[in-house]
Length: 151
Image 1 (spheres, rainbow, N blue to C red):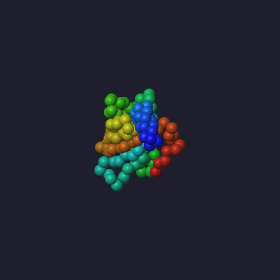
Image 2: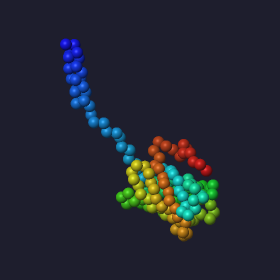
Image 3: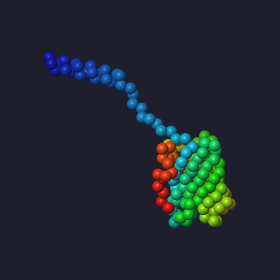
Image 4: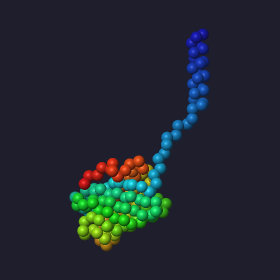
């Protein structure tokens, strides 16, 4: 009799718990284009250069700041960006870095996949130099002061 009572209590409690439990839905993180993106770029046809540091600081007002490394020198550029669906594009002019790069105009094209990853192509407008890049969106609570880069 005790066993039967315990079994009925157990089944009743299980039914109540299961029927009142809400369906578990993990939170989905969505990333906006605006913010800090950090990753690497490579130069087509020059595998000996390896992957190099590359970042975008994408502003809500349509401006972009690019930072990258070339020959152990930090380059910076400013310009504008646009988004059409998942297609991202930007153009900017190098304002700091190697002397031969100052004033160089570059363009980038990429696909945004909403998972925090941006992959695309870059090109120097006045030369045939081009390559690929992959950047990852850094969370808003992550600041540049905590960013670790290999220079």
